[in-house]
Image (cartoon, rainbow, N blue to C red; front, side, top):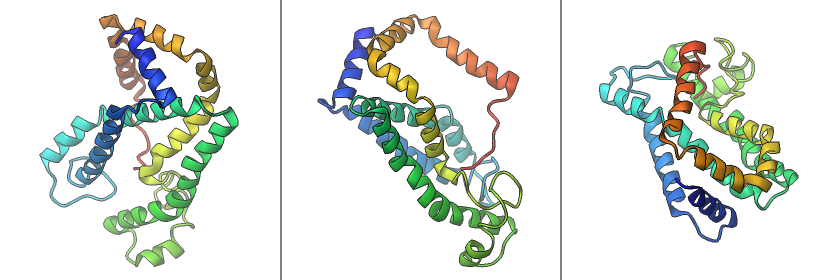
Length: 226
């Protein structure tokens, strides 16, 4: 991709004058795929919150196919949205918007609506709880600690599949100074990066760095919340 192509795409995203339909279609692709991805997790060979008795090699192949690119695609789409938002918002306006769009849904929906039934189903499937959902919600969900930090914890501080919103909110605020800097110099920075990656061998460098981090530090392993 040439420097001028990057500049043109950035200008279109920022101005909103031309709707980038391929970005819309990428969002559709990502949302449809993540729906089938989480359904397939019931049937693959990896451990998960709840599992079907019979597992499928086809589900395993589908999961392995999606893993390398699906979440990176979500982050790329989020970055495009942030780039557009920063062109028309101050730092305070951006932080307020991120809070309204990300933090409040996490707290209201994640803590109290989406997280509880998922933990309940996991506890029932593992035999750790045998009562109704409302019994679990009233007596177990808020009293046994944080889910993922100890075996008995049920409260979803990182609300299962909404972990992505937590990371997005944190990244948005932590990287806000960089976004503000990029607001003034983003075009030239994008052009320099595009020029750098026009050389085919440079594309191998980030791949090698990620592979080394996984091989040496084991960074592919983490707590599983969703």
